Image (tube, rainbow, N blue to C red; front, side, top):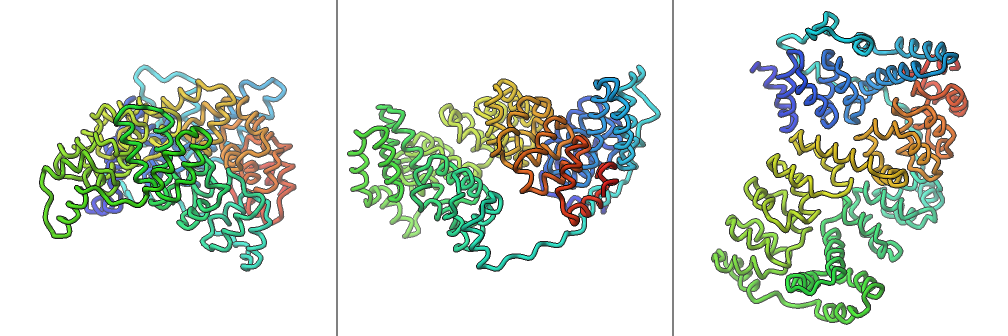
Length: 594
């Protein structure tokens, strides 16, 4: 290994090195059919901009349509490179529409194709020509052609090949408002995006003012919880009665990445408790689990449990009151003895550890037992009725490969959705076990999380997850597809672009909603595969006037109808028009207007 290559490898993360090793092995020669499938999977799923840049700068890989399309659809691909690749995708999309267009329109469509080809990056024009020739005529029996791009040299400059494109010069920022003006805006603004930003502001007074804004909705609170990194904000939302009892908000509190661990644990325990009570099982293990959860329940959560019991099972109110009256209690005698031994610096015996593994009810005790070096103690702890799936999933990332495999062989815990999902994301899990667990996961959200996680290095797992996600989407009816697209926040569009963008009826019905998330409109306006009718519908959407980014993406998309582009162009200020005129991707017709 050369000294320069060794120094370059030091700048990569562990997962990037594994992918880089595969790329360097395949890069010097023409890829086989199986290698093309492997490269397509990397182009779609990798989250490393540097390695995606390397793939985009390998012309003989771009000569294969699946690889080029995967790079164009991956949001981790640098913006400048992705836009150039999207122009190639749009070129072929317009060529297909030109072939299917009526005879009177073919001349205009042909001129649009020529204009778009002239705007392509110089390095991508040979690739576009080769792809067009492959579609126009069959390849010879030998499979060889003299028009393939040249293969790379033996000692490439990896630093230059993976260097990210230069960022565009920063635009001058609008002068920030003073604090008094921001407080007034927080109380009065009717713009959802501005209100969302104020809800996540580090200033506590600004957040309180934004929470009192009459435009604050449950959906906006959930979006703020999912994006906020301010721990105090979660406690403020939790402390308000109008949000405290709402199931959707509590679900977001539990699953938000920035939520404090203690608050997430409190909400998770009460959720697991009401779920267990709702099952109505009279089996001894289930009753023991209910007792264990009641003993661990935080005082602040008794209001929610009482509210739930009053609506669902009034006969359980006496049980809730009984445990609330006994909220302050001493730990079990065994735990007290172990604490005394720990304070004296003495190790617990094997008998004491086994007893604690089967009888412990406190999370701290169970968390320590799960980390016990003896696997037999670990297996006994898995049978403890007080062990919750939330605690097990939280402790799971610290397990080594052997312990993760032991948990994967457990017949009961692998059927628990939370544990199965956390186990699939374990970086050392074998591919066979990960594939078996993948079949147990239900719904779209766990599948999307698998495709998003860079720690999962098994390409077969991600390929099957993508196939499962595609089947789920295609089996839905139109209302369910619209719901899935809205709840995924655009992630579904990222992983299934062809299936979604070819479903014109679903897109039209979704865009017809006046309360649609602007982020989805932005993704549709940016994508070069979005149908013309949908782009024209977005151009008339009421959200458009409040989001200059959507207008810019519509103008930069060569498929946007001319009438709609001209109308949007007139809505922009001179500064915004000047900024777009500096973009090489602006269509020629709009450049003439400028």
